[in-house]
Amino acid sequence: MSYLIEIATTDFETTSAAVEGGADRIELCSALSEGGLTPSFGLIRQCRAAFSVPLFPILRPRGGDFRYSDDELAILEADLRACKDLGCDGVVLGLLKKDGTLPLKKLARLQELAYPMEVTFHRAFDRCRDPFEALEALIQLGYQRILTSGQKPSAPEGARLIAQLVAAADGRISIMPGAGVRPDNIKALAAATGATEFHSAMRSRRDSTMEFRHPSFPATDFQLDAIDPAQVRHLRKNLES
Image 1 (cartoon, rainbow, N blue to C red):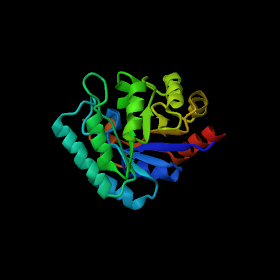
Image 2: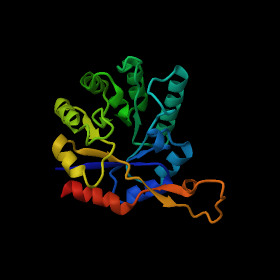
Image 3: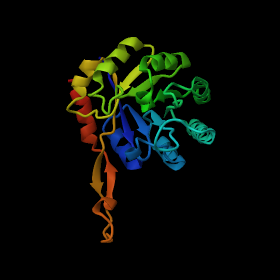
Image 4: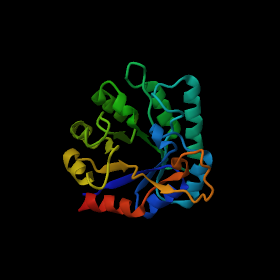
């Protein structure tokens, strides 16, 4: 069985660490505490110049829900064009209507604008009303994959639905489990779902190199996102063992 591991990164250092650890693809984002927001133009450009691994920036103009105004959609489209101009391999996005269904015309336009980049529909999928209806719609629209935790807070909790989605997709679109995917559960998740692509943040924290630390501010202000390349390798080893 051939597996693919996507790692979510938040800056140049974590991207470098994920690539060193053997990530097959990078989902580049900012603000993972918000579930991931659109990274900066400068970060995308620098990562594209430095790394040959497939690069998929997330396109999400704000936190919160996934129903966007026309102005927010215009921002998303501008960021999509920038990703295309910078030579990204794909983008990660998702939209919903207020009733929990997919805005098909808007999603079709985004897919057309993205071509020939691939498009992953992100965990907005986990907030949709009918996952099987959404699955068929995304297949018809030509999207390449769905990132999902099985409409639960984590992929291990949603494994049953993920398995049903993998079966229903029948190879027409990739179903990629994400959220809570770690070295100690990825093997069982693969067995339970039949998925072959997996998404993980593998996020930890590292201490800042700042020497002066103002006492009015908490210690967490002097910590940065980190990824241990060895843990990325451990993730793959456990999956493929």
